[in-house]
Length: 501
Image 1 (cartoon, rainbow, N blue to C red):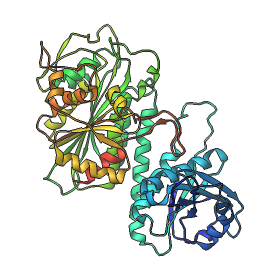
Image 2 (cartoon, rainbow, N blue to C red):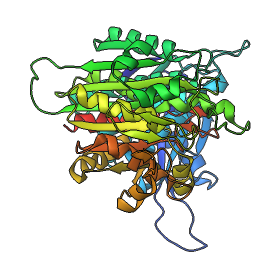
Image 3 (cartoon, rainbow, N blue to C red):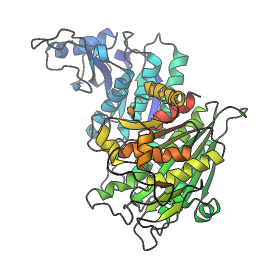
Image 4 (tube, rainbow, N blue to C red):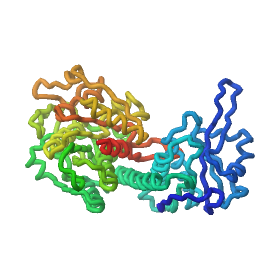
């Protein structure tokens, strides 16, 4: 998708479709209160073109509500699309992101291949963040998961332009626009990985895709397999991999900015289970096909590394992705087995379907061995987190309040929803083993927290954040601004956390 930032007058822009945002300014309450939609633009011609339809009362400017006008009078654009932000008092930059995605997805099935989105004016929202969010939203909206359809029709938007007021601070907006392109493309790169079926994206191929990306953007990289796992004594990681005919991949990406030789080293660790059958503790057949997305945490880390390499923050970053299948082969581990992790901790296997925490255990230990002073991991780890938070918030855990405060602050920019859940000695008690050090499950209750306590054992005293993204990594139903399928969640938040250092 070609992208451009324009400072031309809206009414004079020749385009297939001009999209303008609207908000409901109504503040009265009660059953008789009616919406009062207004366009968020100072362009008199645009406002005049939409005045009659806005006065009619049918359009309410609800969040992502759309209204299309053909041949709008007084405008050079062939069509005018109005996209709602909801109540003006509650309008946010994140609403702009979704509105941009909504505008793009509105155009795709209609054969419209170019779109201009007018930046909200009237000092309602900060312009720089709004520009960045709009571009990110456009890329997210342009992605569709129908990669392997033989009758696939390319409905991609070929040209997307953000139109900003002529009096804007151009240098600030240009920088924000460039950032938005990088972040949007990186999130979609993650989504393209998560979307691949297990037979098309084996651990080996995931390693190849990560290496190709790293070479393209200037990251250091290594991809290892079985021999390296044995050399490092990654018994927890190997215990999952041993049941698959596909060899595992230990993916390491390095970002080392010029001139930065001290300060923190951030360790990004991702779960890369390219297909999860559950192993001997076999999953039910219903929805097992979705288990190709069990590598979404690893993919989020790879996508974040792409954005980091291009945005060049002044902090060193190491990424470790532990990729394997979890399969019920004759050589697969069994419930009751005891495995020795890279750290030396022994793990009693209660359920082979609790495999993500096993690969992350060795990934966290290895990231520390490589020099990480702060850790963040991401994984589609537990159904318990989805039960607790639904598909609205992802879970977050941390052993260090200051480190988590940086992540919480990052959400202000990323717009993603994470909710901090508890750790504690009571949860740690649930994973104590009678035969070894710890068990890989703590029973039915508090499953997201006991899984996080398991990982905390391997983070040890290193400041650490755990992201359980099981509920948000896959969009179950299409929304106006994003297609059903992989979401790319956590890429933006991890990036902003890194930048905070």
